[in-house]
Length: 180
Image (cartoon, rainbow, N blue to C red):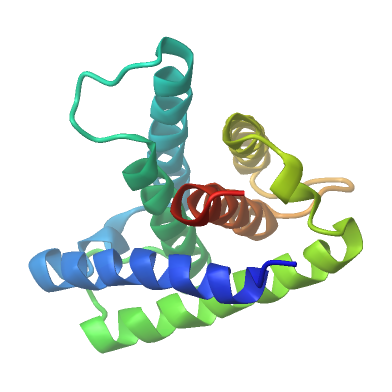
C-alpha cells in the first residue's frame, strides 16, 4: 500500500512552499478576509476546476493543479480566520502565519488519517472529478452554515468542512503528483 501519510506530507510541502512565497511577496494581507470571503475564494477555485474538467480546456494558462493548491491554502487560511477572526490589516508576521499554517496542516493530516483508516483508502479508487464535486458540495454546505450564522441542528461546523475540502484537494494533488 502506498504511504498516504508521506504523500500527504509531500503535497502539503508543495502547498506550503507557495504559501510561504506569497507571504514574502504580500505579507498576511489575507487577514482582512472574513470567513465567508474565504469560502467564496475556494468556490471560485473549485468552480474553475469543474469548468476545466467539463470543457476539457483552459483558456488561462493555469490548470487544475494550481487551483487544488489554492484550495488547500485557502482552506488553511479559513481555519486560521475562524480561530483568530479577521483583522483590519496584516497583523501576523510571516513566522506566525507559517506556524498557524503548520498547525492546521497537521490537524488536517490527523483527520485524514483517521478517516482513511475507517474508509480503507477508498479515495484512491475515486476520480479527481469526484473530489471536485465533493469540494463544491462542501462549499454549498459551508455557505448554508454561514447563512445560518453557524446555528446548525446536527451538522458539523465550517471548520470541519474546510478540513474536508483541504483533504479532498490533497487527494487530487496526490493523484496528480504520484498517479493512482
